[in-house]
Image (tube, rainbow, N blue to C red; front, side, top):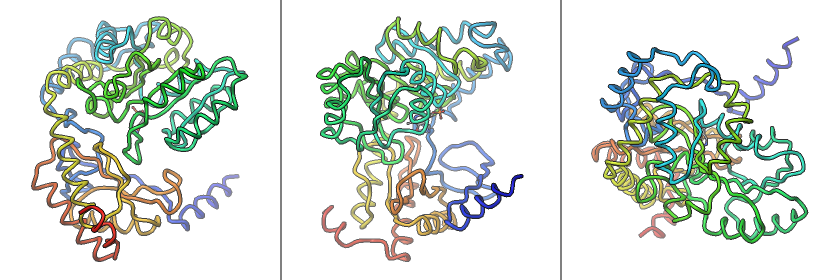
Amino acid sequence: MTDYLSQELQQIREQGLFRTLRRIDASSDTETVLEGKKVLLFSSNNYLGLANDSRMKEKAIEAIKQFGTGSGGSRLTTGNLSLHEQLERDIASFKGKEASLVFSSGFLANVGIISTLMKQGDVILSDSLNHASIIDGCRLSKADTVIYNHVDMNDLEKKLQSVTSYQRKLIVTDGVFSMDGNIAPLPAIVSLAQKYGAMVMVDDAHSTGILGKTGAGTAEYFGLTNQIDLLMGTLSKSIGAEGGYVAASHSLIQYLRNKARSFIFQTALSPSVVAASIEGIRIIREERERSVRLLENAEFLRNGLKKSGFSLVDGSTPILAVLIGSAQDAVHFSKRLEEEGIFAPAIRPPTVPEGMSRIRLTIMATHRQEQLEYALHTFVKIGKEMNLLSTKNVMQSK
Ligand code: PMP
């Protein structure tokens, strides 16, 4: 009965695309332990280092002592703790919106929001590099989905012109694209949305806590908070905990609370995670120097890699996509990095297009200068070994 599975797995192996789990034996700080070996971590979404902050741990422990380890029910039955309500108030205020709703993960937030708001007869316009959870939300929604070329505003306008007969339209985009690290052109998206009468939803998973004056993300960065209908995000990256959310108007939030299946039929987040999230948002709002440091760290490594002859996707965020080429080369590069004590996995198809396999580095505010310098030195060493450094790149970045 399951022969077809083994055959397919064999094909995946032959294409060099077989995935295995790697075991981390310590906290996900800049130095960690990978299967017994000490390594520098350059692939965590714990951008600000808050997942290891003692104040976050304290709040989580206090919440366990007061409320226990599990919430014991869905939010609409017995699981709605005062902590959840406080977190939702804090997210709304942080994001500059009337209200917010928390889900058990960012993935479930995207799936729930999109599949609930958009129905048969509606149309969704989605960037070709949007996160998998947005794609799944679109699929589940039964609305027609039109994919526009990545950040191509001419293509988005062309596609908007082809869907004028639909009554309800939603444009959805990552704020910062998770595999490339570039920022979505929100001013152009908002202006097209206004011209063609579409709602806008932004997934700020990778910019919350980092971009914008108060760290609220790409909408704040562009001064467009009021023009964007739905600000989605996750509690699992900069905020250092777990869970997903959306901030929007009262009526949108009430609608989702009543209708979103991934909210209604899921056990509420556990007290420790919620308490840590509240603390994470407080720290982000009060300690802006963390994100300044993070962006400086990212800039240092990005410039260093470019000057050394590596090809990087253009960007100004803590996600550095160092293009390697084939899946096999990317895997080899990552293996060599690991031998040199750096953990940064290769990203391969189907996550990224064929020939665009890469090492995706994520920088942390807590990376020390000598760690960044060691990473740069090691990249150059392996780049030379594999003949990947282009003199053209070196000339261009001078
Ligand atoms: N959106 C984007 C852009 C992401 O990168 C991720 C996580 N990788 C998610 C949503 C899902 O968030 P979570 O991990 O909280 O489920």
